[in-house]
Length: 218
Ligand code: DX5
Ligand code: ZN
Image 1 (cartoon, protein in one colour):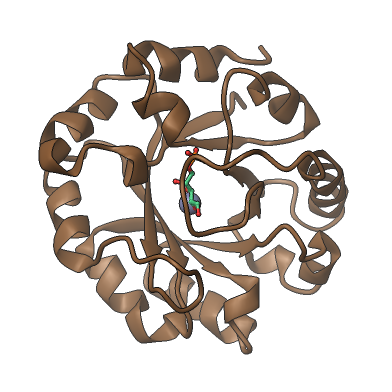
Image 2 (spheres, protein in one colour; image 1 turned 90 degrees about the vertical axis):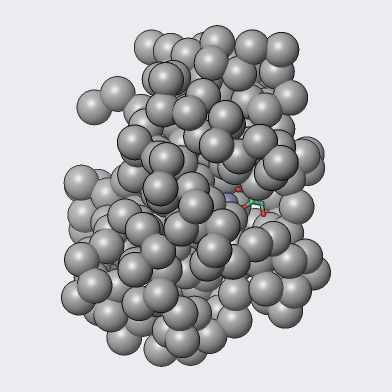
């Protein structure tokens, strides 16, 4: 399967959000990545339900909701109702991760777990068979526009091996600092979904930037 591109609207112009969503609708982008930050799990606050619902109103692509929040169980149904197709929770934020994952699946969403740069992928050994996707953080979560952490390639090798043993259909998403300089190498290392914020929205031609990421590594 060809890899997917999920432009992250954290880097969009919030005063022109409809325009930026329509740009993604008319691009090779596959999903729209939606970053939710609570100022507790991460040191930043992004946006909440009214914004997600507004994005959903214009989006013609699946919303890929990434929850960087503590105790996400409180809000899973609300994000489903706001339009999420995928919901990612953080390994580090979920003491009862198996229950949380089952709840996401009961809601009818793709269930995904993110691991921070310091969290070994092998900790997912006993949950990976239940997941639709694993998100490898290639920066510390909380902000767009950060520098890519090269240890991500080693983590991709680990998750690829784990997925081959336990869940061959698993999506493997990489999030943070993805751009034209590393996209091809990430795809070759096993990434099947690339999230990209600044490299898309700060490009002179965002539609072309998305097309370039989509053809990377082919
Ligand atoms: C970071 C977010 C990312 C962010 C990526 O905490 O999870 O999704 O939007 O932005 P870039 O591509 O600019 O690193
Ligand atoms: Zn994200």
